[in-house]
Each structure stands twice: as C-alpha cells, then as structure tokens.
Amino acid sequence: MAIVIDGKAVAQTIRSEIADEVRRLSEKYGKVPGLAVVIVSNRKDSQSYVGMKRKAFCELGIKSFDIDLPEQVSEADLIKQVHELNANPDVHGILVQLPLPKHINEEKVLTEISLEKDVDGFHPLNIGKLAMKGREPLFLPCTPKACLELLSRSGVSIKGKKAVVVGRSNIVGLPASLLLLKADATVTIVHSHTKDPESIIRQADIVIAAAGQPKMIKGSWIKPGAAVIDVGTNAIDDPSKKSGYRLVGDVDFEEASKVAGWITPVPGGVGPMTVTMLLKNTLDGAKRTLE
Ligand code: GUN
Image (cartoon, rainbow, N blue to C red; front, top):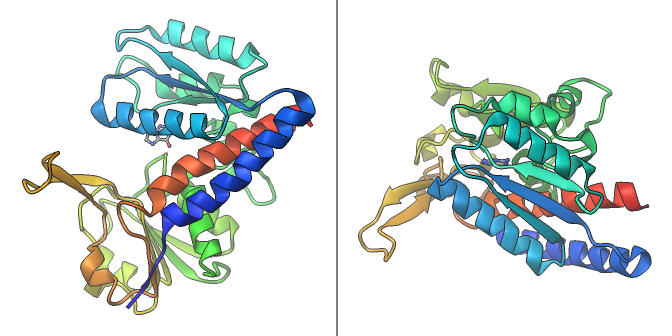
C-alpha cells in the first residue's frame, strides 16, 4: 500500500513557519505582507478558490486587498486597476483569478502585473525564465511548486527520474513539466492528442496528474512504487452528500493506492498546499522589498 501524503499536515507546518516570519517582519519594519486578489467573475469555482485564499491570508496576518470587479468590466479598466496595485507599496503580491471573461485578453492583463508582484508566476517573463536553463524566475507558479514541495518533503528524489505530467495547461501542466525539468527529471507530457497515454504513464517514476478528468488514471496504469501527485479536483454527483457532490481526483485513488509508493488524496493533498505556496510567494515578495 502506498504512503498517503497528507497535504493538509504539510501545509499546516509551512503555514506556521510563514506566520512566524510575518510576525518578525511586522515587529522589525512595522509592515505586514499584502496580497491583492482580483476576481472578475461570478463563476462558483473561482469564487470558492478566492474565498479560500482570502481566508488563509487573514489567518496568517497577511493583509488581503479584495478587488471584486463586475463580469462586464472593460479590459482597460482591469489594467488600470492592476497599475494602481503595482504602484501601491502595501501590496507585495497581485493575483488575478483565471479564467477571465472572454472579452478580456488574459495575456495582456498578466503582462501588466509588475514582475516583482507576480506571485502566481504567470507573467511571460517569469514563465520564460522557468523554461530556460540557468535562469531563475522571481516566483514559481503555486500549484506546480506545491507538487514539488510535497515530493521533496516526502523524501522522493527527482533527479534522473522519469516523470510524466498529464495535462498541459498554462496554470499547472506546462509549468509543472518545466519545474521537473529544472529539477533534472526526464519529462514527458501526456495530453489529449497523445496516443496510448496508458503505456507512457506506466513507465513513470513520478506522475503529476492535471488533466481535469475524474478518475481517468487507473491503478493498472501506475508503475509499482511510483510517486503519484493528483492535482485533479473534479466535482462528481453524490446524492449521499448534503451538497449533492463530492470531489475526486484525476487518479482512481482506491486502485492506485494499492500500487503506488506515494500518493496524494483528493481532497487534502495538493489543494491546501497550493494556497500555502501562494502565502509563501507573497511573504517572499514582501521580504524582497522590505529587507
Ligand atoms: N485559476 C485556477 N487556479 C488558479 C491559480 O493558481 N491562479 C490564478 N490566478 N487563477 C487560477
């Protein structure tokens, strides 16, 4: 049976380290880190992610600047808002929740965020540096960073290993594959056009599943002893729950946990760690300007 990686427990440990640092900064400089979270959407999932982020920030004494813009806001007005946040010295990190409404050009908006405040690591220059050998971005995207942190804190080495990333989104799959490459893994990306994904995944020492397909990866696809990090958070109908749904990953946990060496559960795996990495990036951004 696999070791189940407890993301919630790891997240708690890191959050208490961050809280200590926030206190130290506050005593030394009379300032606390500040994060602006901009949301331009009524989407339930986006509202729920943003709610979780804001709550975690308050708990740690990090100041949260909440910018809620109507769905119809123009691209120019959103960019104006970003510029104001760039100029605000109390804001050390800016996060624009994605996806944005269709009439707004995501790339244009993300490019306007100050590099020093790009706590999501989505600015093309930060992503470009992540892709290049010998260059270091100022911030790493939170979910990929969470995946690698869980591997390293579980004692799973990456160097020289075969890693397969399932999914190639700009938010998770692509940056996760770049990060694994930087950590000297041999990386393969499986996506919707890949032929015979199963046989490729079966060769992997490390699997990062970020396809957004409930229970797509079966136990028989996993190499015995592999480390499996499941980023999927798919809501499926469950009439036995008060909410009417429950969350499942991209990996069939019941099957895969019998084969893998390590596995993250959903919920309670990558999710709490992603928010924690955002807290850490904001703290690092604040330290860079204050110290
Ligand atoms: N939407 C889903 N995940 C993320 C994330 O990590 N950052 C932002 N900005 N939007 C998201």
